[in-house]
Length: 231
Image 1 (cartoon, rainbow, N blue to C red):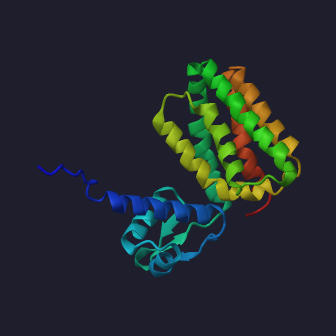
Image 2: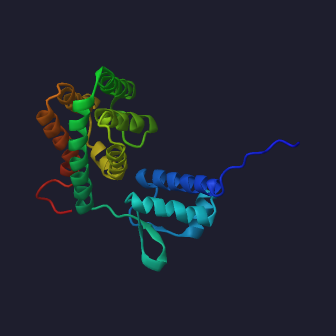
Image 3: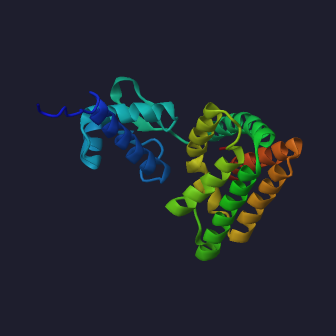
């Protein structure tokens, strides 16, 4: 009797392709290779990424839900614009979510959580020491370490949805952080800002940690769009 050959669920290949399309598009958008406002034609994207039209459309739809792409009626899609209003909204949502998440993380966190925060901060510090003051958003290693630190602060909040929302909003703010990072001429100053944030959280003073986190999240908005300046 011939052995039974298991088959991948119907649609699995299409899902994989649409995920790949979404990932490739997301990388090019947040890296600035696809500028804000760029029209995204299906034919051009199929040629650019060598992915079929159907999974490409599905990938585009996924990025609409993440706020990186907007639909333009029957005319297709374009990369979402950047604006002070958009960053203010992202910052508002991040503050609501992360202030609650850090409260829960402090409440639930154990020694392993504390060690993970210190470990991710140490890895980021060592990376910056090796690269000098050339560290920037856009370098894959730095991006991973920076996001890893911020995720570690919230990791024990006990809510998958809070962590998912944090991750998506962190990525939506990426294009704005790239602008802010150009203003950092000192890796030591960058690390010091994150050390202070870690210290407040590890001290388990919820009010102080929430206040410092709020200030930290608003720093991108205040830098990219200084108060009193239109934008």
